[in-house]
Length: 143
Image (cartoon, rainbow, N blue to C red):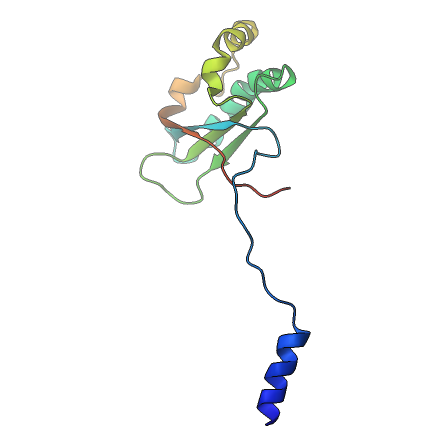
């Protein structure tokens, strides 16, 4: 008898659980597509390649962000050895065409940039691009 009373009481007293509903939402940042570039550093430690990307790619990307051509950029290092890459550069664009929609404007930025070598090397002496992917955000947190 006590068990039934507890179950009846708990059904009334406890709030009902409603599972979250997942629906595609526009990315909070306005990103329509992310382009990921996968790189493999020539040295097992990717520090020099990361320094090169920071001093070159991201200097130009920051100008593109300020002009509204790109929305954001990030660099990720693999936490463990992968088969063929250890660095990923991700760039968020305001259009689903991504880089294709800003080629002309970005090339103007590139022409103005003075390449910074790291340990006397450009990117080809530090890493190689092994692939790229476009990713369209479909479900994201609201923050």
